[in-house]
Amino acid sequence: MNMTPDTPTDAHKIVRRLAAAEGYLELNLPDYALGEMAKINDAGAFEGILHLLRGEALQAQARFDEAIPALNRAAELFPAPFNHRALLGLSHCYREQGEVDLADLAEARATPPDLPPGAKLQLVIVPIFQVATKANRRTNVEVEQAEDDE
Image 1: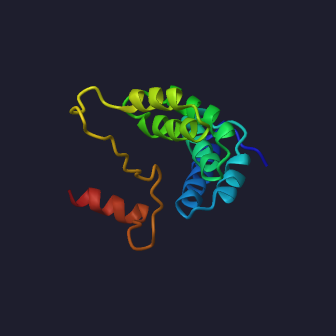
Image 2: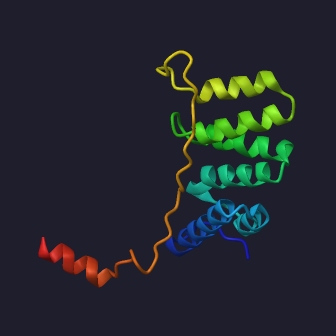
């Protein structure tokens, strides 16, 4: 079943698939992540996230030649500085392919211009999606009651 974001329900399903894929990547299960993403036909506004996660999944499988186009597209879709994650992944893939000049170029594009000389850029990956748990989930009724109390 392929999905396109024609309705809010479809968009919600796409987000759920992308969140599942990201979760699988966090668990180092790129095969399952790619399986979730394969069920998305047209990601619409979520295209950048789809390409980023697909590139990261392929990179985790050491399929660097396939990861490069996906990470390249993600880097194009996300404006700077939000494309650092894609650019650093791209740099890693190029380096693994022996394309040191392209790796250095991607890394340079990811480096903020105000980074002090000699400092090394480190990326802290923060999940794009946060999955609510029973401990932190609030029902609509609870939210409405809290808003009424304010």
